[in-house]
Image 1 (tube, helix red, strand yellow):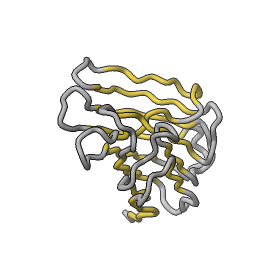
Image 2 (cartoon, rainbow, N blue to C red):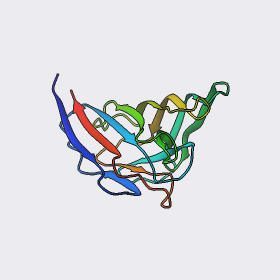
Image 3 (cartoon, rainbow, N blue to C red):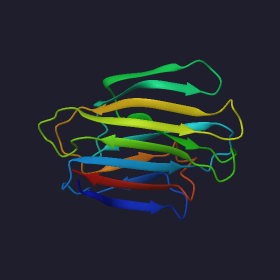
Image 4 (cartoon, helix red, strand yellow):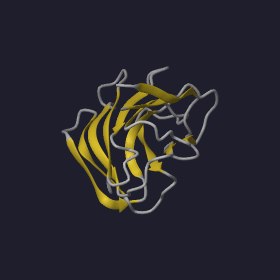
Length: 177
């Protein structure tokens, strides 16, 4: 099995989005890992957003199970073809939380180059932690994009332009067969 890192970076300044373009079509599956923090002065976490190939049509969905703080587990259900982006596929640690701690997310996108698959799936594991047991977030989910196009671009957005990714946010995108 060949494994190749296509893109890897750590932000040196704040940024509203991370745009991974010209994704090679040489592998079968993608793995995306992001360690995210925002400039927002808050003791909570927030979700980021993601699109494929610049598409903002209502072709996305997201379903899963999450834990938020000390509340009971919840169901995350944004039905396929109901959203114009994948909502909350990764978490962002806000800047008033534990110093130098980033929210970690790992995504697997199988068969990203296969144009006969009309709904691309994204397996997601994400979580945040910190000094408080009331503000952590853990999510295991599956998102989808209803398109037969091969994925050649992934764009990740911070919560809002007023709370961008903080310098030090890092990521890598890899592919394997």
